[in-house]
Amino acid sequence: MEEFPRIKRLPPYVLAVVTDLKAKMRKDGEDIIDLGMGNPDLPTPKHIVDKLIEASRNPRNHRYSASRGIPKLRLAICNYYKRKFNVELDPDTEAIATIGAKEGLSHLVLAVMGPGDIALVPNPTYPIHSYSVVIANADVRSISLTSGEGDFLDRTRRAMKTIWPKPKVLILSFPHNPTTEVVDLEFFRRIVEFAKENELLVIHDLAYADLVFDGYKAPSILQVPGAKDVAVELYSMSKGYSMPGWRVGFVVGNKRMVGALGRIKSYLDYGMFQAIQVAATVALNGPYRVVEEAVDIYRRRRDCLVDGFSRIGWKFPKPQGTMFVWAPLPEPFRAMGSIEFSKMLLTRGKVAVSPGVGFGEHGEGFVRFALVENEHRIRQAIRGAKTILQAPVKVKAK
Image 1 (cartoon, rainbow, N blue to C red):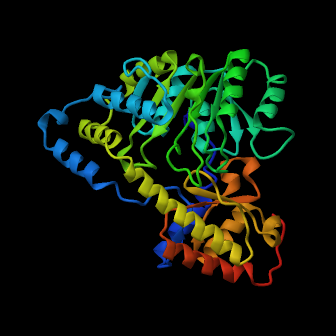
Image 2: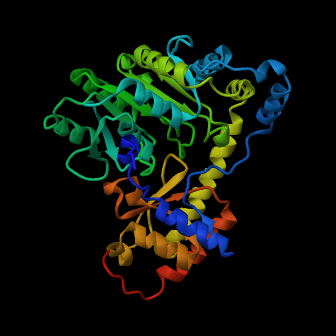
Image 3: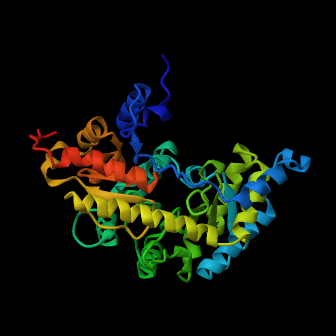
C-alpha cells in the first residue's frame, strides 16, 4: 500500500490512551468527571449569540467571505490591542483573522517553514506547537521548559550554539499550556533581543491573554519596541470570550509573516462564515465585563480544586494564568509515570486528567487538570481521588 509521508511523521496521539479509555467507560454507563481536555464549558455571552442570529438572517452573509477577515473584524482586534496593550497595529497589513488560533498557527508555520528549516519549541508544550512544524516538513529542536540550568532563554542560548543549520523560528506561548508558567515584559525584551541577534522569527501564542488571576497581567510580546521586526502573536476568542466552537482567532504583528499567512490562506480557505465574523466584531467592541465574569468563574474553580486537593494531601501551586492546573504526581505514585497514574485515576476515581508526557517527554511526572467542570463536580472529583490517595498502595515502576 502507498505510504503517506507527511502522515507517517505524525506519531500516535499519546493523550488518546486516556481519551479512548474514558470513552469506553462512559459507554459502559460510568459517570466520568472530565478534567482532561481543555474544552471551555461556559456559554457564549448572550449579546454575541444574538448578533450571530441576526447576522445569520442577512443573505449578504451567506456568500463567500474574505480569508483575511472582514475589515471591521480586523479593525476590532487592532482596537483591542490598543486598549489592552497600548500596541498600534495596521488592520490592513499587521492583522489577519484565522479559523481559530490552531489553524492560524498551523498555516503560518506552513507559510514560513519548509524542509531543512528548524524551529525551537519549549518542551512540554501544546502539541500543535511542535507538530505544525512536522506537518510543514521542517524539524523541531525541543528546549526544556521545566529543567536545566538557568531559565528557558538561557537554555535556548546554549542550544543555539550546538544546532546546525541555524534555527529559523522560535515558538512560544505564555501563559503556558500545559505548565501554566507566566512571564513578565522583561522576558519578552530579552526574547526580542535574542531573536534579532540570531535572525530568528518569533511566533508567540497568546491564547490565554485574558485568563489571568491574582493581579497578574499577561504581557504581549508586541509591547516591546521593535518586536514587530521579528515577531507575530496569536490571539484566540475561545477562552476569555467563551467562543471555542466558533473558531475565531487572529495573527498580528510582523508584516512579512502576516502577509505570508494571508497569501497561503487565499489558496486554502474563504475565511469564517461571515455572520460569525460580525458577531466576533461585536464581542471585541463590546463590554469587557463578560470576560472578567468568565475569569472569576475559572478563578473560583482553580481555588476549589487546588485547596481541595491540598486538604487530602496532594499539594501544588495555584496558577496565575490559563484554564489549567499543572500538578506533580503525588509522591507515592511517581514511579508509575503520568500515563499509568492517569489511567488509575480514571478507572478507580472516575476522574479524567491529561498525562504530562502527552505534552512532551519533559512533561513526565505531571498531570494537567482542565478547569472545565463546575465546583460541585470538582469537589466530586476530589472525593474520587481521595479514595486512591489515602489508600495503602504498592506502586510498580513504569
